[in-house]
Length: 425
Length: 202
Image (cartoon, rainbow over the protein chains, first blue to last red):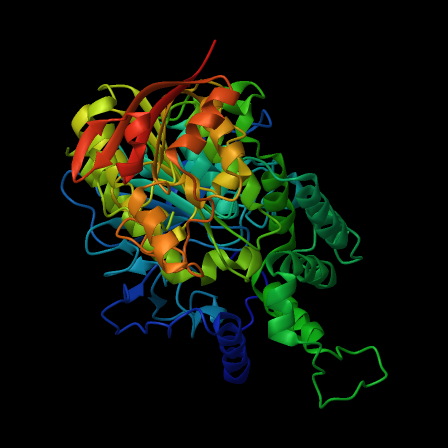
């Protein structure tokens, strides 16, 4: 992985610590992780790469520029059938990658040591017998444009200079991502997807898919997401970006051959993590406990459990994420506005939809509000389009979309199967 | 809604009443059984509103569009007269704000279909008089402390509301002695369940 910066192999001890932290995060809700040999796991998988834009066929971007070359990293689980009509595209969120399910044989060799003891980010939803059943469906996931996990992004080498793009990388949007994904789907020979599905920023992509390519998707599943970020959401992202750009190591994004702006990226991640939890889930998880015994340390090191958790999240994040990508991806999230398809009118935009839509929110999610999803559902319903909306009771906040596996599985499975019923009446 | 739906008289009547191809909103659609039948067999364009998550999930499994929402919050977001029919099948007695729900029903639908257990049925009244306790009958099988039916009313109560609110009763049916019969006010004491088709005057 040439362009993931500082892919320093972690010691075994650190790896174990990270997976422990993951278990803490997922206690109570998740069952145990399915190992690569489990009948419910897609097993060992590998990332693929394809060039989807070159000099003769650059990718036009919303900002007015065009970009080439563009390589896309993607993964596939399950078999594409002969008619190529059993494919599902899942879309990752801010810090995700194409590795949605299964295990890497040699994560270290791929430069992704943090994945040594961890399956793909949606492994609890994708696999044989799971919500996205790989016995039946062929599940595809690709890394977004501007990311740092194999798809071309600011850490990639710019053809004109021979050096990493840095901030010379064009500003990309959710629409650009989806147009690139459409190239991937076409490259794979798929005419229509069974569904497009994602949570958070992945949900925004799923919605964009349904609006941009109504004929290419039979349905869309939009989870813990929104038609546009609230001003509060924009504000959080602004602070995150400021933390990065204010880091003296940021150097206008040209830090690839020296120290990277880890402090800034850490602060950005800590802030983001607060927005992913809820007051209740934090209280349950940390309960104002001190890290070392029950007494205050009277110093400014991480004293409380919650401080330790945020620090740990930040430290492991800077090991695996590129600060420039963080800027580009949050900006894309900010710019996303589904109403653009209706000239600023969401009602009009929804006229474009043709397949059925499932919207899911979580009661304690204060970053992507349940009310917004319900309003989106009503807006789609007003257009006499097929829409279902469910709000899952959960105390996990925005993170619930990765944790409330059972309820989400029930909804997704019912939605995918229920569609079959109505079409075959 | 967690209301006894064992007696399917209203299912039958509603299925007969709703013209093929019309648009229908089912308030408190439960597991979506009625809507599913209307959609599949009569080509109705249907949408359900349901507040219990498990029921929403079941409705989705039937391939029926449903919005997870509490009727007591109203139907803001749905335009006036958007649906040909709005169904309140044995749901009204279980909401916190029945008048508000009725107003919303009348607002978003050209016609409303309301069915409810008749608390004025003579067996219910007799049970209350003779035992001095809240009646427990086949149609009202709950104890006072666990009943989802928090606003019980009679046929007469409903007619009073309609009269006072410019709501016309288009049609009425009763479930009487295991038979579906046209509703007659003077026979309402023998109606176990009642179904009215209503619309706003003017």
